[in-house]
Image 1 (cartoon, rainbow, N blue to C red):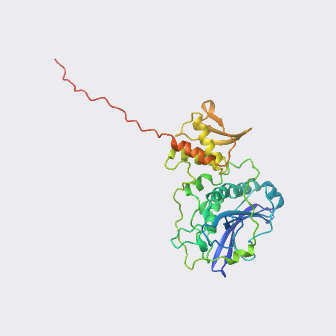
Image 2 (cartoon, helix red, strand yellow):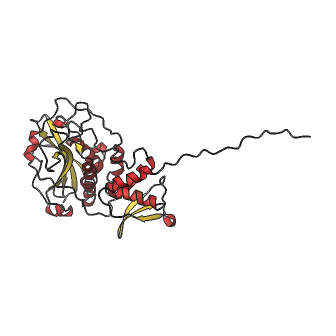
Image 3 (tube, one colour):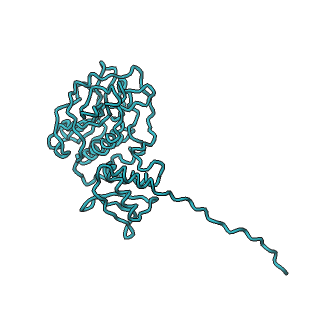
Length: 336
């Protein structure tokens, strides 16, 4: 038996002029276990559409096609035969290794990245692109999810077809770096899990996608996104929030509660925190050893992110204190 692997693939659309890039998880026998896509989705029905045509109606969402029944049960989902895999597609195996490592990488894409991206409810650009180079579409999801699974420098850009949006991220690059796969974090082989929706779609619809006739050469970076920060402009709490996101698999409500809990318990906003799984739930910690502050994190509920952010925003910011220097005294010459 061989290694498990993560494969980048490219679906030709519009007669091969352009491409929709996506990710495939393969087991040690080479069987496709799952796929990760960015797709235009109807906000009312939750169903995918061939191409976004109305920014008010269609959003950009991560969709997870799981083909293996057991793996689907681990996600609390159903398996599907829907696939964008076709013979003769451009493809590249980007990462291979033990089952533990590859499932750990895939989990970052299918849970952490997917949840953060879907929470943003981004408008899908009509026609799939923007002429100003700021396109965030299916190929941008491919770029972002891939960077979090295998590292941004390892995400292939296939030669030949147009791939609008492939160099653009849909999450701030500092968030991508903070939450990308960490081999040490998954060394114990945690079981994949999460609530990412399995998309039941007609793969033939992808052939109807339209793309621009010029190459989109957007920036490879992104400015900080207020939807990812806890309190815009407050670097101390935003740093703690990013640290908490890493321990909550990207759950904004739980991460915000962790920051709020350590603050309420007397924690220092200018010191690092970590979130780990305790016997009865999440624990947020600051410091080490006997001096560490360990605080239970309440069960997160929808809206906790907004509530904690509002509470912290109302807290007065400390004003730097300027030390008052004593006035220099005139030195008298000694008498002799």
